Amino acid sequence: MRNAWATTGLVMLGMMAAMPTRAQDQGLKVDALRLEIGGFTDEPGASGSVLAHGAVSLRGDSGDWSYALGARLDAHSQSGSNDFERVRLDYTENYLRWQKQDLRVTLGTQNVLWGRVDEISPTDRMSRVDFSRGVLDKLPDRRRAVPAVRTEYFGEGFKLDGVLLPVFDEAVMPHANSVWNPVDTVNGRILGIGNLPGIVGARVVKADINGAGGAGLRLTAEGEGFDYGFSVQRVRQSQPYYKVVPGAPVVLQAVHPFSTVLGAELETERMGATWRMEVAVNSAVPLTTQTFQYRTDPALDIVIGAEFFPGDSETRVTLQLAGHRTFTNQPVLDRTRIYSFTGEIEHPFANGRWRADLRFAMGLNDRDLYLNPRLSYTGIDRQEIYLAAHLFSGASNTLGGFFRRNDSVVVGWQGKF
Image 1 (cartoon, one colour):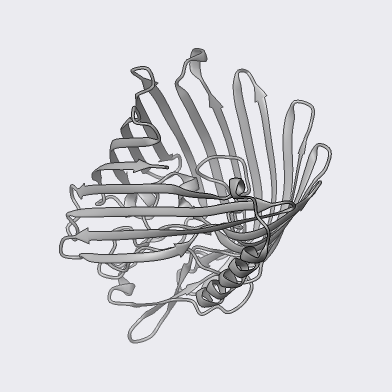
Image 2 (cartoon, one colour):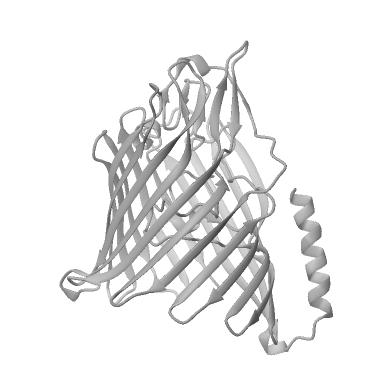
């Protein structure tokens, strides 16, 4: 599949070379450079980690046509008894686009980020998940470009957005030895389920999918004092769910079920804050029964968030309440009710050269906590030096509980040029 898209990219590059272009419209850009070094405080299988990341792009246009060529390189290493090194080359946006008046058509790999709320967006299903570092990065950095054919119509006060995913490309997952891997076959644990002693020593098998990723249609519009939108998507789940295949030995089979997602979204400004809301009905959430049978059932997600600047200061506060309910008539190992409170507090100081930041997520019905304090120096143009911590705790079936041994302190540098 990747080879097919590499061939497509070469064909597009040839088409672009044949097109007349204006030199001033061309642009080679370093989209991101990043180096991060971290140490774990309690993880028995890992003592430290290193991340090196770089992304570049070339963009240009000529008349009604424009294009983008881009790639990224990610190098991960982990030291300790479960050490590994992995270097991965991946595509970013590589597309050919035609735009005329109110109509825009884009063919190629591109970012498709639907939804309005931060951190937890139940209608963001068209993009490809990046789970290579768990939840250490903010939501936009945990999403990657996806192969797509996209048509956008810009009307008076509204936009109609149609996306087709002609091939399926699964989420970017961690190395098998990574402390961020959602499957722990050494201690018998699965993220979202918790302790499962029967999978100790199990073999993990990737999904074998040769087909489309799905399609979606989204309408967004401007009202009087508020913006709103509706979407319908029939897509595969990007991040794998692991189905237990009993036997000797036990096998965990990655699956990416198709589901239909109906979404509604709203954004408005009231009482000195920007309010955002999303509601999504999902037809097929994967589950595992207490007898280890795989099934899917419908679910409802509701997220309400507010962004404001207390006292008209430079401090930015983002808060969200999220609720998830899966409707099933069978006893299952998965959590069917998840209520959480997430947010971020960001405060610049010293004439904007420094920034203090705190991201957090806590469970409201189960003990679950993630804290990410961060101090950044931003006094260098388009660069940032930061010191941060990632702290986890909670019940074994929650995210904070699953990663509770992964508390870490990191120092890093990043820039865009």
